[in-house]
Length: 343
Ligand code: AMP
Ligand code: AHG
Ligand code: MN
Ligand code: MN
Image (cartoon, rainbow, N blue to C red; front, side, top):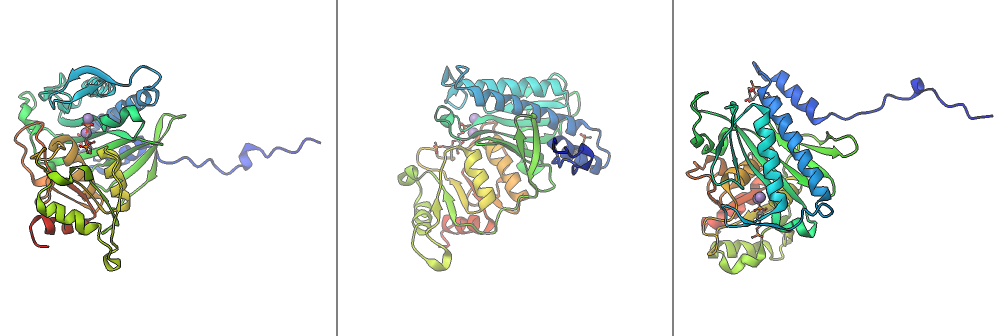
């Protein structure tokens, strides 16, 4: 006799996680007087990164690896995926109707969007480009601010705002799974893309960066170019000392999104110091350091240029660089003590 098949009614309700869309909608209902523009813009960014993700996953098959032959404003060779990701974000942000000014690592100048929407969006369309052809984790980084210039008098200087005015920041990490890590000022939450559904589902709510970790992330190859205090910190963190849990383990991917994400979850410290080659550091303030600093502070971590809080830096130019130290508040403080000659 055929085994009786339990009717669907007797099945427990399927457990479906919270989607990014639902999470953002909850945030809208909790925001007094919200018109829905912020929510719509964020949903458009979610669409853009899912399109980028799709192309990243097939890049090797779709002739999308390698260089375009162009050089960007940074003086860096532009990868095909850099250009693709940049085009997708520009197109989708324009269509959203809520972006007033956009600035990208791949655009020389900030751009006034047709719709003159109320938000500024700053982004690094593809972070970790040097890792694309070797299949190592790469990502997209963005920050959103409210425009301060009047509705019909859009000023591109609206992009040059200190990071403490950010209202939303996030990154995607195209790794073994595709993650969307987001903060709208109410903690940090990670969403994982279900590629079969095409939706991001909440996977790690309320991420907290540990007060202290036991890992450090820096490009050791730059040692000889660092100032003496940073060389001293680097030697200190590798000494054997059980009491202070040293030596710290070293991990360095070379994609900010990957190195920052690991540090956010596990604690410890990521640093890209200024050196004799990159005298202001290599990472860009507006669309790499600031978004990451916003997220780390929202998760209880810290972000400095070695001395001062990243979010307090008043930008003077669109692509300005800054030394960047991200991580556990205690580990970032220790780094600062070496930097200031206090150790
Ligand atoms: P809006 O009127 O939609 O542009 O929203 C006005 C402000 O309310 C935004 O700049 C945010 O600071 C906040 N807000 C609106 N929607 C959300 C949301 N979905 N999540 C978090 N904050 C929000
Ligand atoms: P991008 O690919 O957007 O230019 O960013 C690359 C950055 C960042 O992702 C990473 O932390 C850093 O470059 C690595 O630099 P080094 O290779 O000099 O260590
Ligand atoms: Mn980058
Ligand atoms: Mn980039």
